[in-house]
Image (cartoon, rainbow, N blue to C red; front, side, top):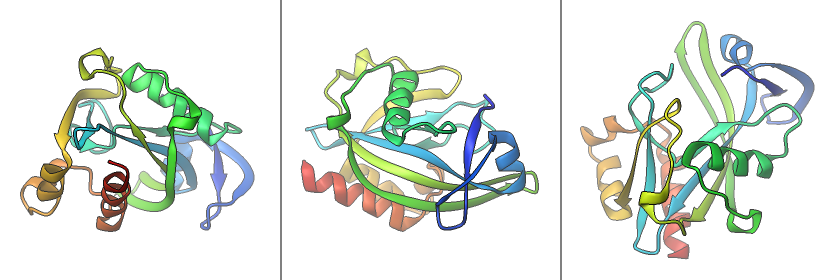
Length: 182
């Protein structure tokens, strides 16, 4: 879905300009996203398999919930909206713990360049897994995986191919933040 988003400079500051998401991707303009990683008290992490119709990384496993921040939209409101849209649950702002903002540049093709700042949160999943309602257009599947197994798979050259290729620093920051609170 194409939407209007704020354009940022290379340091992550708003430029005062907006554009359609498709134009930002076509031109490699920086913009904002939210990433929310859910974990359980059983030391599991909620993973989302990207829909096969996605233009980037179809069918790879990724962050529990993610999405673009609309033009003028508050980061927290965007996170809460994306959670409700993608996995069908409502949480409170106080449930989110921001752990950082990560700059990411991924050139998929000459006409699809993701230049993003990921506002990244962790949140305990207090809803039973079977009550989650995935958004079919965005999400192929959901799974809970032990964090210990997740770490092993990310460090194995074959199994890490199943995941979106975020930086090692990004994944390590997520895992360390979650392990501190469980």
